[in-house]
Length: 345
Image (cartoon, rainbow, N blue to C red; front, side, top):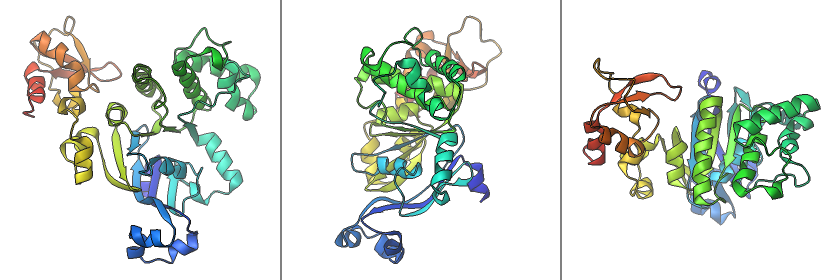
């Protein structure tokens, strides 16, 4: 239980088998449960198969896979929008699957929020009242909820558009409203189910950047669903790759690319350049006493080598490294970056 309590979200032996009741599934042997053909013969489909993982507070945990891999079913089981067949889900130490209807509503209001691919904004409400809507449902006074909404409008970069209606906003702006609305109640766990997949590539990239900026400020526990490996690598602390309802590997982006455990994962990541997944922090060395930190370029420790290669190699001498809060933590040398680009590291 101590491990469960230390994680913000803990998932143990979670199954979702469509077509089977809890008792029917529990009556099977372990061999039968893990035999896809045996389940299929009964008319059952195992969309999530014996999932086990812990997500730490403030972690961005990405669940990804191809269409039909079970990733969206997984996130709906974790939030109990779909009832799992068996297993346990603890959020902030509380067993979500043991909660009755009233307790579940209270847990969702206090701990969880979701953003989906489709924005689902209320067309008859402007931007301000769309964002304030969850607080209105919670009974928060109008002055307080609109003040909170204005804070979030500023946070997602939409100041000046408070009176605009959804049909007056671009797709990217609408999704920003959806993100702001999901943050109105200050959730501890933030579920995002392919939130950017319907957007154009440039808008999508901008919103990924915005999400990372928001996470630096807010430090939410994020469960992010995507089928896009580039997106996963860009935003994730860790990635879980699913295949046919099963999690086949969990690891940091560089672990998945450099140490794939199955042929499926190898195929999944084989075209990813190493420089895209190795972070500056893994190349950072202690700051030399003679480096000019006033005039030196700065790079972020969480950037990839690909992102900072031109800056560092173009500088022809070590560049100062800062962590996301702006603290100087060391330097990165041009030769270290060059080794990654050449595939030596």
